[in-house]
Length: 460
Image (cartoon, rainbow, N blue to C red; front, side):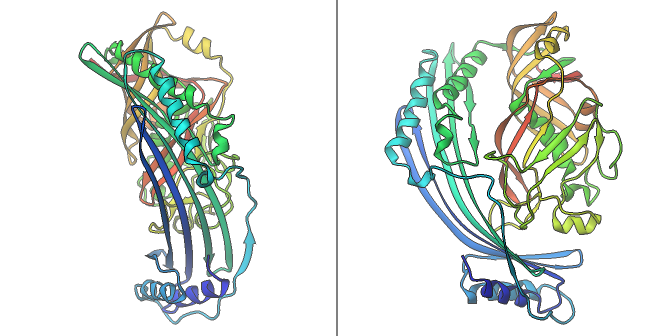
């Protein structure tokens, strides 16, 4: 996107007032989407964004300036603005960059922007037909395809000059069931760091639409969930959102470095049940939260966060690594060039255990089976959370009894981790967009089926 000589001149200008580190992040992003409502394609969009961000450190202080002018004059002007905000000594000498080529773990076969509109429309209509075929109670179906392709270039005053290409594709289907004056919705939205080959074997759009519609119909006929304290079985996939939100964010250096985490200062201590191992892995080929390099140019990693219940690692970016005196873990991410990066999750999951899923439920007694989780809220400082159950069932005498709706799971992340007494052997992941100080980014959440000995269940 820009010449090495332009990057060198920009970084030199950024350090002219005495900063001790400078970084240049350039991005060119193309993307689009197609949307269908009730059998008719209603939207077809394309977008492009292009720009650069310049960051300057002076000790533990950081300044970030971004611009959509990536000419030499535009970059130098932005670098001067960043430098002017730094109160330091004299500038540095010449900067010499050395190109580093990152290994590509995510080859793309079918670029989304090259796919004909007719093929995209057929995928959407296949979703609509499959969802409606589930039940005459399905009254509305929305289907979407979303995709983007980003080239990034990262250079810094330590001599790094590297880049990456990132292609993402995702579908989303939402179905609404109506009856007796009520309505319930269900959704499914798988995606990957892949092109349209995603739909040639990995994701069956019709099956995903049926999942969304079945969930809507099931919850339409569910009774209100009773409230109380009870054992809770949480299924895999998006069930991992509780760990992601209530625990994962508290293991990011942006929280830990300032003491805004219930897990600050607890490395080497037991924070979870001995059967719990949790991992944040950016190296998984083709996965939604994976990268070749992070947004500071550090190679991505597979990072064990909790090992047999013991906290062994945090997710660390460059600036917070300075604050904590810890090495970077390839966990620095940002939405786009308009955001400064910080420590973020990638593919975060509880690792598979050794328990049989049927036995987990059979030995539960009476409780709640949370088959699918919805949204919620979390206080990252305390780990206190409140999550909706999108699809839930009561368990009676060790058997799944009947569907219930309106259930919420209430608790505290550190307490729930210690109360996990079963971890199944089959782990899978689900896709989401995670929002934080560096914007909204693709992340996977996941886990096997787990059981928590007792949780507060909100209901009626």
